[in-house]
Image: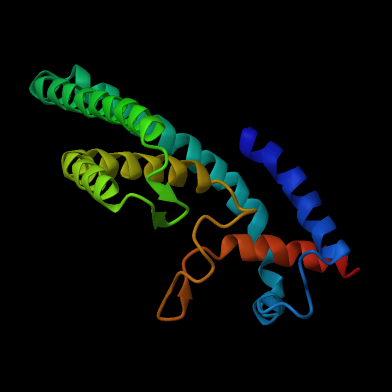
Length: 192
């Protein structure tokens, strides 16, 4: 339901940006892409409907799998160990942030913009934090993976804004073309 509620303000916002000239239409680099295959606007309604259903099912499936793995006898010990590992990483990250904030408050004058005002102290602090972060790197990887998975599960239902950059292509194939069709629909309706 939230996804459908986002379409109306997004549609109005994009329309007003085109009308005011904030987004250029005729002089835009994307104009030729919008002008080609204009009849593809018929895909927007079906994409938004099944995107909503798919996004909801992905959320239920992802969280259901996690809870199911905690319940199953053969995987519950692994999931408990994984949860303990994640908790340990979170605790180490919190300690790092606490130490770093105290250290930065105490030695706040080590940097002036990008310039090191006290190179020896700043090098020691940077080396110490880099060494500590080698152990926390796996946590950053898992955090980014979780963020991207959750964002993609939500964004697969959004047809009004791109999830991937418009420059993400492979062999001329654009992976995220549905938002382009959404904008084509706006331009077709605005032309009349």
